[in-house]
Length: 345
Image 1 (tube, rainbow, N blue to C red):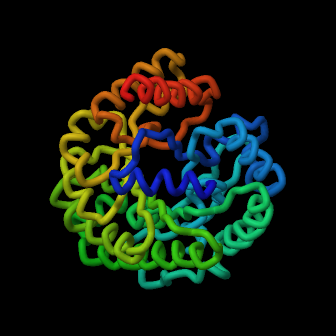
Image 2 (cartoon, rainbow, N blue to C red):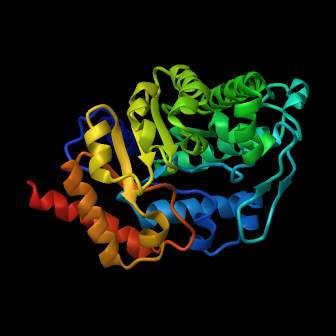
């Protein structure tokens, strides 16, 4: 991001923005295909990774890309530090296999050291390399990201297995979540200390959206809050595009400034319940409209979001940008904001 872009996001998070902006969460599912390279080239050839990111920010100067120049290996970075098998493919994101077959095995897991374990040290090294390349061009890595504690727990244990464990092995499940929470905090801290201009964190965790309100209060909220509380001076973003409606009001208590949520959470309802406490980031359908729709359909959805929030929104996809999203549809988001601003001066 540029210095101006992070300031725009900060103002929006504080409810002080004078106008809406466009921001998009982008990573390996979308960038390689859009840039005309394979996923393997994106992950394994830093120069091509950098060229793809620079092409993107130069093509869309009015879009804030989140987290921006993101060094990532899909969802594999944190699980790899625990020994999960990671499979890389030519034209799709990496896949991760769980590492424990029974919740009783968590005793052999330890919080990893980001400087030496799994893919984490590669990320730290490439972040420093990228920072040196982009700094002369006016960019900097100002936001760092991590998968959340429940997302990490399900990669270590398996989604179905983890959801079963919290019902029949709650004590052991809490131990696993303690381990994952500490890992996320250490990983975010290691990244923040690795770079000169970090002032924001992004935590991505959809798994709480699979829980009941009661289970959310016990197995998700305390751990997410502990992570955000560990970074009181940072601008804090949370991404969850699963089914959060039953406990959405609790999201404001996490200490976050921005929430990126699913388009299936009605924008008017979301604004009514959260708009005074958290800045909403959304909520154009990422696949059905932004990736597969026409620019006219994108514009219609964008206008609905802008009108429902009276412009108090970071216009975005209701989740990350999906593979196949066209430049024209991203342009439509930008033009919708400009048109809405002109009509409300």
